[in-house]
Image (cartoon, rainbow, N blue to C red):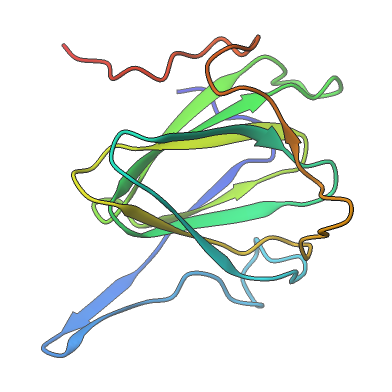
Length: 153
């Protein structure tokens, strides 16, 4: 699989015991950490696609705490050596990872499990309601060479 320049993936350690489980997601002493903006949660119902957008300033840090998603990234950055690359990352309960998504990289995800997926994001910037750093395009009708349909076989 081709990796987009600047995308980093960190395995997350799950510590279970008879009371439940603990999973550290992101720390200020983590090599991926640059600065803190905010933490928020978003969800997707089974089969739902939430895509495409990118940020000019913000770097995202995604972790899934329930369910499974297919995170898809597309590098449209003019100065990137991986320009035009599509990267699929499967993540969630069955694969606990943190994904760092650099600014300028389109991203979106699809819930591929049987129940609602819960995603935690720790972006480097706070959300600006007056001037959002979100640049969106249609999830299905665009110039990104990607089809969200399930790939059976």
